[in-house]
View (cartoon, rainbow, N blue to C red):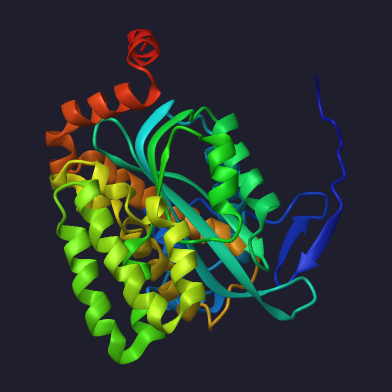
Amino acid sequence: MGDLNLKVPRVRYGNTFRPSLLPEKWKRVDKDYENLLVALLANGYTRARIKNTLEGLNLPYSEESIEDLVNLIYDHLQFYKDSTLEEEMFAVFIDAYHGKLRDEEGKVKDISIYVSVGINMEGHKTIIGWWVKRGRENKAFWAEVLQDIVSRGLSRVGIFVTDDFSGLRGILRQYFPLSDHQLCFVHLQRNLRREFGETYKEIKVELKKIKDSYTKEEAEGYWSRLIEIVRKIKPKRAKELEEKKDNYLAFTQYPEEIRKYIYTTNTVESINSGLELMRMELGGYFPSIKSLEVNLFIQLSNLNDRWMRKPIGVIRGNLYRIHQLMNIKFGAQDYALDRSDD
């Protein structure tokens, strides 16, 4: 074709020339470098701390590289939050973490992060989802959460385990009317200890008997005695506990070997510890919703991978009995027909 006689515009940067129409130079980095950045983000490192760490390792720092990686993770995060759930689970746990977030105006405000973990019908723990809420929860919020879970495919749950969140008990009955709902027994113990001081010694005895009961009927007897102790000091509190009896004793309907996994939200509280550590590493508050979700997603993904490698032994050993309970709860014929399609 011959010479084209192109004249490329140049802009001088220091002692070098570079065409002004081209974007800034990019550097090729290997997978180990990317993995290092992901690991630093996952451990709650701030941008400044990441920069110092990389410089200490004689590695290049690029704000663009960090931002590109965050955006890539955020894309995966959105896909994960919309991913299909298993149709049935033995147990679903929901717990809250309360922290601080810097909003768009630079003000630090209170937020709540609700994380849900499930135990599937093979005995594996798995992350179901998470939701960030500014202010207190209400019925509208719980309707959104449960609608999200249902729309992603989860339709049968043996037992939900939660704290006594405002509005959740009623809305849960609407979306999962056949599921049991266990209110965290450990949180009940903590609350009663704080509320009743010296009288808690008597209450503690009855709580232990409830946990050790062989049947739900036996547990109900001890629960009645607990209510009488509470009523002598706080009648209103006694009435509230009586109304929630079935929620606090739901775990007693299940085999003794697996009760320790379903009477408390401790399954989720290990995640809360990670969130607290992350918040402290970030200076006492989360810098943005996006930063919070990206860091949380990385931690939850790593945790989920570990969980899926090894099921809970006691749950795995009682799968036959768990399936029997699900048969009874959801109707043996319909349940068996649905499972035959798997």
